[in-house]
Image 1 (cartoon, rainbow, N blue to C red):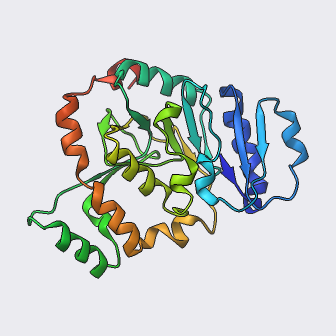
Image 2 (tube, rainbow, N blue to C red):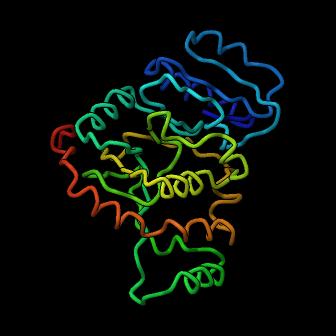
Length: 255
């Protein structure tokens, strides 16, 4: 998890919801001069003050190479008490070799007109990068009834074996669009991205007046749209390769 001082007032509540579920929580303290004293109350929290502000890319600064699974986390999400255990059980049931999982997925829908990659790129620029008009979202705030193969996962609710995560140096220049960069690298490496089922309200957002999404990601600059263009619609090929996914929702989620 990466954070910064503007989130200090609520950080304690977020850490309190997730730290007890993990063997170890590495907390990257961007822009901090000192470690907050209250963190001493969490024996499994490892605070790290980086030399420079890593923003949302800081989630990939630690390298937990010996872990079975790494949970990437955001500092503005309240995680339920069964977040880790339930996610692990769903991953066990799905049992997709070499896959990365998460609770927030985007699927890009091909437009009815057959647009070439060049036209699609120009279209996204004409529309100020709003290529997102072409997608479906399986968000972490709404109910998702079954597992889906997706083009992109939100890194605040992403779960992966450590060897399938990018290195920090591969994403360090993707501040504000870390989800896009992780999706692009996963696509190039043929790593399936799977959005997991969950109920509405299981994960909750702490609302802030400012966020990287509002300041940067929502506007989707042309260089970000260009990265999206490279992996958009990749889920179609991945889904064909994997075949039908197990009905994990029937075994894990109760009505």
